[in-house]
Image (tube, rainbow over all chains, first blue to last red; front, side, top):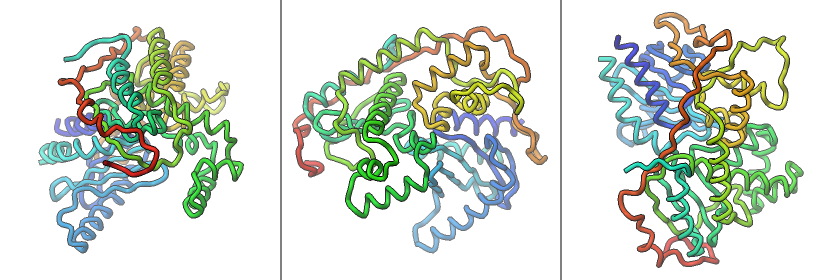
Length: 120
Length: 288
């Protein structure tokens, strides 16, 4: 089932990048497609993520900075990273303070492409 | 080429650290691998290490609640305004004792080297120049001591069975006897998805200390190896269920000792070329 493959892809990303504590894939209108958040409320996360992505994309346009690649929120207790998946979905990653951001940058592109293919 | 070694990646690290120490380098030794990171030197001694594999001093202080977030933020802002080091500010505000802070910083550096040595090292790159750190270890740590400590810890752990993802052997209810000594928090965090490193970060404790604590809890039957991934919640439904947790202690065969491998660099580490740049520095002029 493509849904199991999707979860497997999300879990594989968590294995590859140290510090990822949870993941979720949601639709652009804020509904959960697949979640592995490790306890964070997935519905709230999905709704906020979809809105955040839309705002971040508009910010990039407003700032004349081209296409949004990643929206990263850094807080005292960790990170939230948001990526557009095609035109219809969004990937959100939750990380602790030790998130390997360097490796995340390397892995996220391929992960987004894989997830987009699985959702197609 | 991968080589199995009882000493983890200590060998390659020893070589690289030795060059930096001998040169009295000030700057960063960037280590690629898993977890990889950056070892920061001042005059040949290690003052800070950044790695995703081990909690930083800030995480150790804040997550353990040794210092509150608001106290930290206030001290940080005040230190920046006054141009004072954060360590001075923390001590001046009596948020920590000077000796206690030095021990914590030394512990953090030793833990980070242990984590690097326990992982894989692929390449290193020396970058002279001096960076600012929030809480540098001063005076810095000697590389010989750090490597000896890392080797010792690796040897200790080699005698203990430990597995990375563990889960509480039985669902702890509010009526359960409290184990005390931080063990309750560890059991609460051992959900089968968190690795030892993840638990260390969540607790604000070193990875080595957390590994030992988990091994002890395993030996006492309080933790078991996490089963193959628990399924996520069913789709199209509100995700209210938690992943399946075993309700009863399970008898699991002892897992094969995790093989520690280090891969020798594909070429001799090119530390000679930049040696001319690794002059001892007294000032703070970065680069050359």
